[in-house]
Amino acid sequence: MVRAIERPLQALVNGAMHGKDPYSVVRSTVFWGAVLKFLLHLRRILKREGLVNYILAALAPTLKKLPQIRNKLDKEMSKSMADFREKFSKELTDPRTQLPAEGMKEKDILDLMQTRKELDTKHWKAGKITGAVYHGEEKHYEFVSQVFGKWGFCNPLHPGIHPALRQMDSEVVQMIVNLYNGGPDACGSFTTGGTESILMAIKAYRDWAKAEKGITDPNIVICSTAHAAFDKAGKYFNVFVKHAKTNDDMQIDLKHMKSLIDGNTIAIVGSCCQYAHGSIDPIEDMAAIARRKNIGLHVDCCLGGFLVPFMEKAGFPLPPFDFRVPGVTSISCDPHKYGFAPKGASVVMFSNKTLRHHMYCYLTKWSGGIYATPTMTGSRAGGPVAATWAAMCKFGEKGYVETTRQIVSAAKKIGKGVEEIEGLRLVGRPDVCVVAFAGSEEAINCYSVADCMQKKFGWELATCQNPSCVHIALTLPTSKNADQFLVDLRESVKDVRANSQAYLSTAGLYGMAASLPASFLEDAAATYLDAMSEAMTTVPAQAGGA
Ligand SMILES: Cc1ncc(COP(=O)(O)O)c(C=O)c1O
Image 1 (cartoon, helix red, strand yellow):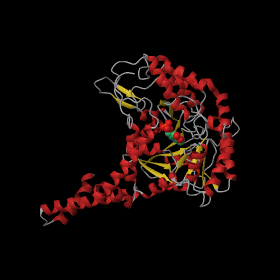
Image 2 (image 1 turned 180 degrees about the horizontal axis):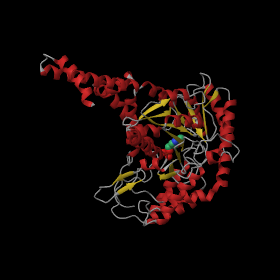
Image 3 (image 1 turned 120 degrees about the vertical axis):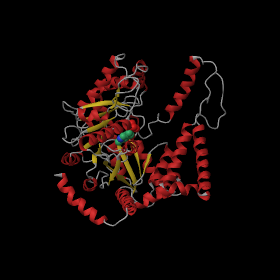
Image 4 (image 1 turned 90 degrees about the vertical axis):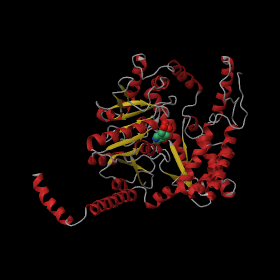
C-alpha cells in the first residue's frame, strides 16, 4: 500500500531532479526549509503579539544599550531607587543586617516585635484601605494565631508524622469542595495562595491537553480583566495567553472569546468576581462553550471565595457559578481573604480526579526516593492549614452569611452612592465586594480623586488601568466606614474639580507609564522589587547583639 503511493512520488521527484547536481538540490532544500520555518514563525507572531510589538520587544535590549538612552535610563533608575529607598527607610525600626554575635534575650526580641507589630497595624487600623486586611479584630487574630503557632513547625509533606495536620488539610479542601457543590468525583488541594492555585490549574490543563489531545503549543483564553496570575502561569508554564475583550459591564465579551478559541486552546477562564471592577463573568454561557469545545473552564473565585457561596442566603442571589454548572472543571477559592484565615491559604478544586492527577508532580527515579507532590511547594507550613480549619469552623455557615451580608451591603451602598455623585461613573458592577469608578467628565481625573482621598482623608484606594479607574475592595473594617467613604468621596470630587492641578502624582505616573514601552516599565518594576528586598537602606548597619 505504502509502496503503491511511494512509487509515483519517487518517479515525480526523480524526474524533477533529473540533471541537477546534488549540491544545488541540498542548497535549495535548506533554503526553502528556512523560508518555510520563517513563514511559520511570522504566522505565529502575527497571531500572537503582532508584528509591531514583536519588533519593539526585539529591539528594546539593543536600544537600551545606546549611550544616550542608557545614560538617561540609568539616571531615572537611580532616582527611582533613591525614592524607593527613602520611602522604605522612613519606617525602619532598629535595623540590622548582621546575625547578632550573641543571641538576643527573648524579652528584647518581643519588645522589638511589639514595636514592629504596631507599625504593621497602624496603616489599616482606621479601616480606610482597600482589601488586604479582611477581618481586623484583635480577638479573632489572637484565636487564629494560637492555632497557627501550635502547627507552625509541622509539615504536610510528612503526613505519617503529622496525621492530624493531614486530616485538617483534607477536611478544609472537602468542606470547600462541598461549599462549591462538587460532585462525588470533585476534589482539590490546599495551596499557599490564589496565585499558586491558579498556576496549578493551568499546569493541570496543560498536561491534560498534552496527554489527551497531543497539544504541544497550548493556549488559554481569559478575559482581559482576569487576574495577573493567569498571565504569570502562561509565562511559567509556556502556555500562550489570549485576552478577550470586555462588554460595557466589564464582563467577558463572549463573541470575542469564542473567536479566540482554536485547536490549541486548552481552557477558558472566568472570574467570580474579578479583581479590578468586581464584575462576574457569564459562567453558565462560558461553560456551555467549554463543553462544546471539550476544553476546561476555570472559575476564579479567589477574591470572592468566601462571599459568593453565601450570597444567596445573605439576600443577594447570583446565577450558578460553581460545580452545579456542567462544564465548570476547576475553581480557585482563597480562605485567606474573606474566609478570615491567615495568609498562606487557598484551595484549587477540580471537577474530577483525572484533572487533578495532571496537576501533580511525580519524580519516580529520584535518588532521594519516589517523590510526588500535589502542588508547587515541597515542604509546606502547617500553620495556615490548621488555622484555616479553625477559622472556618469558628465562623461556620451562619457566621459567613452574616459577614457576607455586611460586606456586600456596604459595596452596594457605595456603588449606589458613587452613581449619585456628579462627575463620577461606576466601572463594572459592584455585585460582590469591589466598587470601581472613574471620572465621567474631563475635569475629574479618578487618579486625582484617589490622591485627594489619600492626602485629605487617609483613604488608600487601588489604582487600575486599561481603562483608568480606581477601586475599593470592601472588607469588614472598611464596610463599617461606608457612609464616611461617600462623604469623603463627595468632598474629594469637589476639591479636584476646584483644584485640578493639586493632585497629579498618580495621574502623572500612569500617564508616563502609558507612553513607555513594556521593557522600560519592567526595568522600573525591577528597581522597585530590588529596593523592596534591601535589608536596610539609609540607616547605618548595627552589628552585634541588642
Ligand atoms: C480575582 C483574584 N484572583 C486571584 C488573586 C490572587 O490571589 P493571591 O494574592 O492570594 O495570590 C486575587 C488577589 O487579589 C484576586 O483578586
